[in-house]
Length: 232
Length: 302
Image (cartoon, rainbow over all chains, first blue to last red; front, side, top):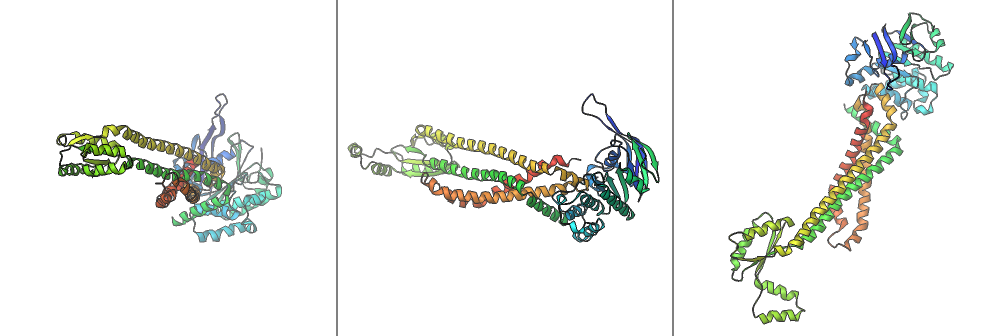
């Protein structure tokens, strides 16, 4: 489903004397449909860069990324929305639209893909129910707790039935109780169909998952295990 | 397509309603621009009326030789009236000229006595010629100095009146130049200020735009609501401006009329109402929309 082939990403610094930073160094691996993959590594290991490349927020310095058989370097900027509609993203800082209620934040993704009003009215309450926020549908993000905001973000990533869900440190701002709640939610979602890619440096989370773990260090893959554990 | 348009409008309206404070600032700036455009339009009319009023008072008289027959004079008049520059021609016969003189100086007995002493009518028959604008007098007078007319025409008082005509002409072009310069300057300032205000409000939304891009919204789906918001601000600014302008015209009209009899500000406003509405709506809506489009451009790059 997704193939990273010899991906290198180098950030060149604007200051002339400082060295360019190698974020990813010839990284290659595949992700199969319906898989649950965790990317682990210390800060700066290259986890977020990988996700940004997949979302085409960044371009690789060299190498190819194939998404459902299509090389991302062939995608023109007008086609970007098409790619992004196939991906649901959950961020550490939630990235919710501040002026929209929980319901509207979720509905917005469906509006973007051109879903009919009846579909929106049918599906948004369903995902709100899945994430357990039916009661908070009319609240603005500022009126929700961290865990609730992240559940809205997950509902938003989920509602348009994307092929893949990327979760970049989704529990980074949450306490242990809410952390497990969010991870269980992601597991539940993966059973519903999409591939889930989770980037995290939370040891407890990884060790409880018993799923595939790709470990990155200084931009290189140092371990790729089917039922991996957090070893750094 | 229709659903998308409805969503864009609905989203634009919601953002307008939720960001009331920013919308208020934008409306105020657009209001200033729109009322400036409207006032400039009225001012242009007022200055034109004043200049036309002065122009009305200027004409050039063509005096004919004593022996010229009335039918020849009328013939010259007919030929003149075929020139495109001529606005109107008035024939004043010798008798009429005398009568006019007597009427004008009826209290000046010494002057009237001197006419009596002459024993004959000293005035010449004349054609009073008015052109559409002061520039055209020179051409008309050249035309009358040409062959065919010199046997009839005694003199043309264009050269005596030339200084007045020149002043008129420079006043006319001066008023136009000054008004155009002021208008251009004000419009540039207004566009810069509204671009800035709307730019700031979009800057506040830059994170939202980033999120919208990440969930796969197309550029027009992101741009649309901002465009709608800008247009709503433009429409409201125009409505407020029309109300303010009608109040100002109604209030100032009697005061201006006491200075310039020929100008009724309120009548001018009423006569030009729909034109004013059109100008102000066009200015308000297009400025709101264009400012939004320009301001959002840089946030829509990948």
